[in-house]
Each structure stands twice: as structure tokens, then as C-alpha cells.
Length: 342
Picture 1 (cartoon, helix red, strand yellow):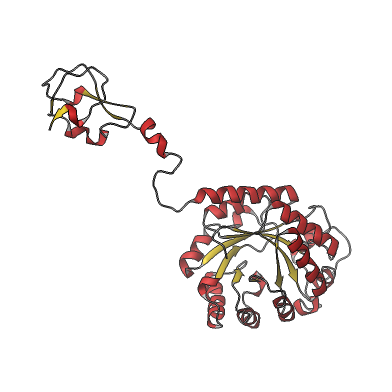
Picture 2 (picture 1 turned 120 degrees about the vertical axis):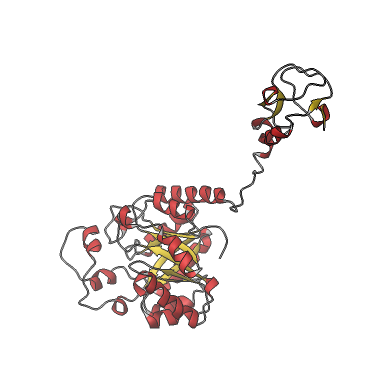
């Protein structure tokens, strides 16, 4: 993956089962300047049992109506592999990269044929041994999302992935909170640094908060990947729309992250190219504080520090005390070593 921050615009299931809506989401992500647009690939029966209830956020975020199971909800949000082939072609047309997260082994095998740049492990699969081994067998970089996880959970998953052949340098671990939307007090952005320190891996952040402030802050804390849900309209029916950015917000998030990324630098503290010209203007050098005659022995009170800074460095001013002048100087003259008997 590239050195710059990778921005994944997470369309997820916000297409509501419509290929045409999915294409419009691709258009929005491309217009915003995201690197990838990502969907979710699953066969509902392979993902949940008939008895599985919806998460509380799914119930809350969807419009009122009769109670349905998670299986029934997900069935309405499925797209076929033929649909994903079309969506990948649409991504190529719009010059944005295609991604999809597979949620079952069969879907992973199908996604492999689409030649994705990398595979994403969703938070709910971090403890799924067969799933992790399947992804590791593809020989592609892996992005591991860690919502609901402890460091011990992450370590177990990393051991599985690396034992099965994924190089540690090809794994990026995403800090994440699996609540939609995530309350700010539950974000715990410092976990990014804990993960990086514990496992010596690249880190990123998958965000489910409202707004764009926290994913931008995550970049400042070292995130190399940002993933963020987006939608055409937060008022649409569906489980994730209310925790997703609308098009203008997505565009602003991308713009802000690009701007922040350009400001991160290499971490070496030194004058920048743009400020070098200002050193002489802003710094001071040693000047005479009064009229002084030839042969005068300099005292501290004979010296003052004035701009510009192209003379004797004030840090060396104490070395001038006790030196004798070779010639008379007026007040406010910038001293040089040639003025002194040294």
C-alpha cells in the first residue's frame, strides 16, 4: 500500500439492495477523492441464523415497522457477484478502486476472483479461525478491524494470519468501535498508539462516530488508513445510514485529511524550506547599544540584540565581553568579528 493515508469510503449496505444506488455511491466516493469505495459481500444464510436478532443500533436506526430478524433484514441488502462485477467496472470508469468485505467463506472465494488489492477482516470475524485462515491463504495484504476487541484478541488473530503466511508488514490493524454511531467518549483514540506499540504493525481507524473530526484526529495520531461510512442521504431506510456521512461531509473529510497529511512531515525538527528565508528577518544579532570609541573594552551594557540575524549570533554574545574594539562605532551598528581584537 502507498505511504499516504488511504481513505476508504465505506458504502457497506447503504445501497439498500439496489445496484443503481450502489453506482451512485461510487460516483459520490469518486467525486470526494477517496481512494477506495467498499461494499459488503455476504449470503445472509451463511452469515446469521434464523433466530439472530438485530443489533440495538439496527433497530434504533431503522424506521418503525414490524419487527424483523437480522436474517430478513440482511436478505434485502444482498447483492450478487454479478452485481459486484458490474460495480467494479463502474469503479474503473470513475477512477476509484473497488473493495468489498466478505462475511462468509463462500463470499471470500468469490471476491478472490475480483482481484482485490487487499482483504478486510471485519470486526465480527476477528475470532473466526476458518475465516482468518481463508483470508491468509490468498497471499494478499490484510486489513484487520478490531471493534469489540482486546489486545489479546488482536494478538490471537495476528498469530493466525502470520502463521498462515501473511507477512506482518502486510497487515494493517484498524482501531474501531462497533456501535453506530459511536459516542465520542467510547472512541479511545489512544488505542491506536497502544496497538502500534504492542504489535509493531501499521495502524488505521475505522470510524463510526458522527461527523468528521475524529477520523481527522486519527490521522494526526498515526492512522495510515481511514475507513468511514457514507450514504446518499442519512434519512434513507436502512441500518447504517444514520451513522454515515452525506456526500458533502465525505468530500470535506477527504479534503481535510489530505491537508493534514501534507502537514505531518518526516518528524525531523529543522527549518522548513519555506521559512529558511525568514531566519535573518526574525532572528537577532549583536549590535552596539551606545557610541563606542576605538580601543574600548566591551561590557555587557555595550551590547544589545537587534534584528536582522545575519551578524554575530546572540548565543555567542558572552564571548565578546572583554574584547577590545579596533575602531570607533556608532550606536546600533551590527558587530562583526573584524571589529574586534580577538
